[in-house]
Image (spheres, helix red, strand yellow):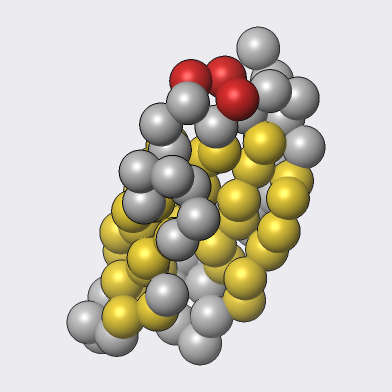
Amino acid sequence: MHTLSGHSLSVTSTAVSRGGISGILATCGLDRAVKVWNLANGSLIRTFALPSAINDISVSVDGEIVVAVSFGSSFFQ
């Protein structure tokens, strides 16, 4: 079990790729950040800074694409 910390405001959504513990977790939040985490060791892989707070997030089956949607209905890939 890992504690993942890094968002400065509330997390609004999470998504997990297929692959169980070898997959990724994507998180998004009111801090306008999308973060991609390694599930095996809990490390942060990458942070994306977006222009607005993010409402929802999804990860493709293979974990290669992360899609985020903002509260203003903007779409980021």
